[in-house]
Structure formats: C-alpha cells, structure tokens
Amino acid sequence: MNSRRTLLTLALLLVSMLIYQQWQMDYHMPKPVATEQSATQQSDMTPISASSATTESKQAQGRLITLKNDVFSLKIDTLGGDVVQSDLLHYAAELNSVERFMLLQNTADKVYVAESGLVGKNGIDTTTTGRAAYHVDGDEFTLADGQDELRVPLTFEKDGVTYRKIFVLKRGVYSIDVNYEIQNQSADAIEVQPYGQLKHTIIGSSGSMAMPTYTGGAYSSSETNYKKYSFDDMKDADLSINTKAGWVAILQHYFVSAWIPNQDATNQLYTNTANGKGFVGYRGPVITIPAGVTETVKSTLWTGPKLQKQMAAVANHLDLTIDYGWAWFIAKPLFLLLELIQSIVKNWGLAIIGVTLVVKAILYPLTKAQYTSMAKMRMLQPKLQEMRERFGDDRQRMTQEMMDLYKKEKVNPLGGCLPILLQMPIFIALYWTFMEAVELRHAPFFGWIQDLSAQDPYYILPILMGGSMFLLQKMSPTAVADPMQQKVVTFMPLIFMVFFLWFPAGLVLYWLVSNLITIAQQQLIYRGLEKKGLHSRHK
Image (cartoon, rainbow, N blue to C red; front, side, top):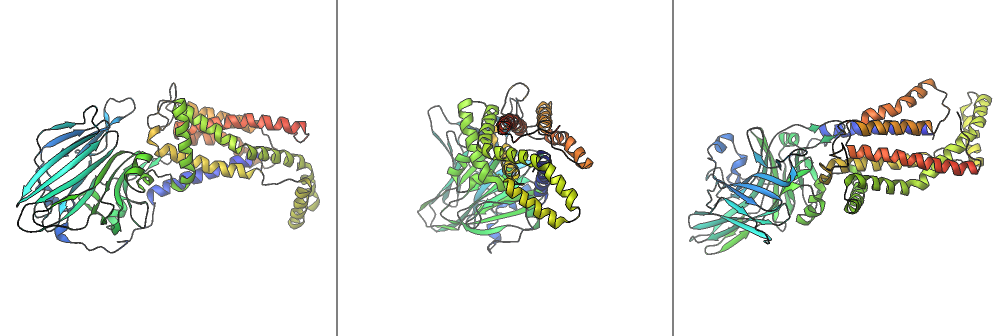
C-alpha cells in the first residue's frame, strides 16, 4: 500500500463519512412502530398542554417569577408552574456576546418549554380543570452567597387539598428538583397522576454536510438505554412505552433538556404533535392519597449544556445524549484525555496538539511498519515489472509468483493499510467529539482562532493543512503508471483542503499537526532505513 493509494483511501473514507452523516440526519432510523410496549391511554389524564389549540388558547398566562442560581436563571409561569425560560449564565448566545444563551424560551419565533403538572381523577392540570393558578410571595428568588440550595414553593388550594409545587435549585448544577407536596385535608381520598413534558416548535434538520446537527426528541427506557425520536418520528407514530425508570429529552447542538421522573416507579413515556409543536413526556403512576395524609411526588428537570459527569449523576444513561455515534468507545477516552491535557495547559488548542502527539506516539510502531513496507515494496518494483512482462495475461501465475516473492522478501503488501484503518476511526471519533463537546464551544486557541468548534473564519488552517499534505505527498514519491491516477493523486491535497474549509477549526488543527508529525516521523524512519540500505528514492 503506497502513500498515494493511502490518500485515495482517505478521500473515499472521508466522503463516505460525510454522506453517511448527512443520511443519518435525514433518515437516522427506520419508521417507528406505535409502541414498544402497549400502554393504556386515558382521556381524563391528558395533560392540558398536549391537547387542542382551543383548550390552550383558553389559558391566560400567569405571572412570571425568576429563580436564579450561579449557573442559570429560570422564569416560571405561576399558571401551571411551567419553566418557560432558562438563560445559561456561563454560555454566551454568540461568540463574544454579552447576551446569555437562552435554552428554554417562549417567544413568537420559537416555543420550547418544560411543562409539568398533576392529572387524573382529582388532577389540577387537565383538559377539564385547566391549569393550577399558583400563589407565591415574591417575584425574584436568588441563591445567596454561601447558600447551597434554594427552595421556592408555589401554592394552590382546591377542595380542601393544598398543593405545593416546590422548585429546588442547587449550586453549580443544571438539574432542578420539581417536587409536589400534596396535603389532603378533605374528607375523601384523592387520586392524582404526575406528568412532565417538553414542548418544542417542530423544526427540520439543521447544520450542513460537514457539520450536521440534530434537534429532536430522545428517550431512555429499561429496554433501550438511549434512542432518538425525531419530530418526523413523532408525526408518524406516537411513542408509548411503559418502563421502570427512564427519561425523556429534547436535544440540540451542545444542549439538552430532560425530564427525569421517579426512577423507582413505572412510568409511561409518550410523544405527540399538535399545532406545529412536538411533545415528549412522561406520565407517572396514579397516586392515591387518603384523607388527612400528605404525599410527596418527586421529579427532576435538566436544562443546560451536555456535561457528561453531571448528567451521569442525575440519571442513568442521560450522558448518552452526548452522542458520539458508533465511534463512542474511542471518542469517550479521547475526550477524557483531551480534558486531562487541557486541565494542565489551560488551552483547548494546545490540548488538541497534545492529544495528537499522544495518538501519533501510540501509532508510531504501525507508522514505522507502514513506511518500512512501502520502502521494501519500492525495492521490489523492478522485479514486479519484470513479472508483468514475463507472464502477460496469465493472472493466476502472476499472482502466485508475486506471493512467493513477498514471502521470500518478508514483505507484507498490506503493511501500510493498518495505520490508515486505525487513523480514520480516531479521526471520526474526534470529529464527533468536536461536534458534541460543549466545552469546545467558543473555546479560543490563539490569534484569529477564537472558536475551535467552528470553521476557521479565514481558512488559514485548512490551507496550511492542504500544504502539509502536499509536502507529505512530495516527500513520499512513488511511481504511478496510470495517468488518471497521477492526476487524482496530484489534486488530492486540494480536494482535502476544500473539504476541510467547513470543518471545525479544532479538527483541522488536529489533522495539520498530525501531518507535520508524520513528516518528522517519516524522515526519522527513512534515515534509519537508509542506514540499513532498505530505502531508495525514486525521482
């Protein structure tokens, strides 16, 4: 396997990867079936926000209150107690913007809110009762310095029952406990069923072929650790799954919102669509509260960036929303290594260079075997040419003689393939790491590179990468007889450079540094081969 064929293989794999990723965006899973398990639908338990537009339009907006800790600021509608806005204080809306990134929002252009309530026989958030109009003393509630937890109760009373919807914010985390404390002071037992759902304006796929992004639903159940359920899937069939534990979520680039119900109960996960909006949610089991008894119902809402460790601590498999695709088993350790190096050098660009050095060092024995095999193959070219002339069209005899020659000279004609086969999964894993790791969002390197997760604004890195590939190609000349192959190989650096114009700058940096290290390794290896008399250059 010579270096020119290696480049051709790289180009084919890269193009195939891009086409596959775009296909995943458009057709990422087969058409869904209606249920994974059968689940009984009860009309009197329908959450009001998932019902018709007529019912929704009857709901006047309540008063908005603000809850704030050190990582986000939330706005809660006192009518229903829904989270209608979340501003992430540590993340800018755009690069160098003073405005903070708004994840949950309820605007004219986009609806994305986290709703929750109580339905069932004595529910206070059904299509017949409307939403609970909660009372709360105050408009703004902030986690004070030195305080680790902020508890804000919203109160609603009806028919001798006091309902307290309690929001619990903690320092440094993006999860919110949303608990119900139900005090039944009536003469009869009551029945309620908790639910939580995310409502999002239905949108199509986003991103580009080089940087596709997914916005849509996802869920986890006892049978499926993690599965996407797009808005198109929701249109085709309503999801309905009875499962122990589990969660539901809406994903987007770098950020996620998820409802995590009581993990010790059997919950029904569902989706539906109405009026241009998609709903993904859960219904908990029916809870009977005898007269004179107070019952607590717990749930958790995550609304924030995709942070692996924090999400893993909140719910099983929630960290899988950081979707590395099939290369996850490579991407996860690579990200841990990247994170470790960054903690030392304090610069994500330098961390990428550090990861590149480690990867190339690990692959060095294979790289050495690759160039040694290429050198030996070049030495055998005269003998191989002689065989072609001697045996002509006798392919069988020609193949046999070549195998005998390779065996005699201890040459593996495929010796150069393994490094490239290993390098591509690493490249793809890094690609998805840059696509999914929110830590790299707006992360600067130096100079003009102020966002390693975005393309180079001046295309300097892709040009340098193309130049390094051209230099590497010229330093590894191999005689190619076919004129068409010669032309393709000559333009390969240019083709790669064009591809990489739209790739994240961090990924281009990795490839550029990898090429420079390969050039250095190549010179080191060839000097060693020349001393052994194995390397002869062909001009």
